Image 1 (cartoon, chains in turn red, orange):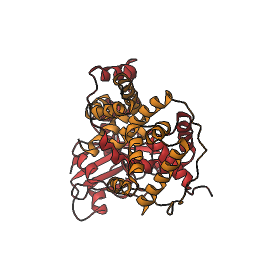
Image 2: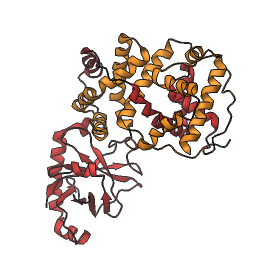
Image 3: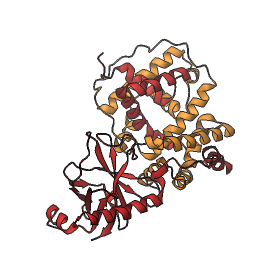
Length: 233
Length: 179
């Protein structure tokens, strides 16, 4: 059996693991294998997806009152700063957004020019100019709410070392949500309807420097290089 | 609350948003306590389990992938794993059965990938293609978190027979799901 092929043994083992019938030592062995064998891990995930329709059998039952307080005590008793660090700081974001606008203005990004060349047809109704303090780089993101398409026009910026630029929506509260990778030479990112609906006037966008192909974690991992707020055109 | 809303709360939790974490708890704790109660069948242990589950959710929220599982399915998986680990920890860590007993009917389409949502519903139709007692064993194992030992006793068959049954049933299920 060559590597990557899914043998009946592996198919059955992944199913046994998801069912939960294996003794503890074998469960641990399966979990270790998932870490080093992506094909096998994919088998487990696909069994989980199939069997999850059996989850309807679990009747909701309210847990006792004190449970949430005990969870919070365990997680937050040290009153340590939230895991988000700088990313979690709204003040940081608001500051960057203003700085970004100023920088974009200072280097002479005229959105009418850029938008005119990018999409001469329907005028997008929301525009964000993304910049960074003290930096002569920037890009303009224009959203057409009707189609959910974000037109991105770069202005003198390309990452080195083969890194990718990833565009994020930074909600007023909570974690940045990835909008996708910034195309190398600009272009259009078509967003899911649900995502496009979250982009309204005042929404903050940011670009971070990520490993090739984008953040491996689902959240930003690299430095923020550009940011700006969406405004009505 | 929709699956998208739950996904959003998990994403916010991943970046350390405690308010989103509390909202996620409010929306999902009853379901996940239902899971740990059903498997552990003991209120105090189910409470301990559900605490552990939310600690894990807080720490692992960043590994949730929207395209891979529905938000609720992801949460239930964490709760099932926790409860099953706790119940298995009280049982022998290994069982004295044959290593990977013989399985018939090799998977005819090993490359086919299971899809989500609508596809997942097919498990019910495919369970219907198994003999009734085999389908029942699969469902009981999943929902109640039964061990091979418990399944063998419930079906009054030797341990190895039970394992061979269940593994064959899984391969038949897989074959049906890939069809």
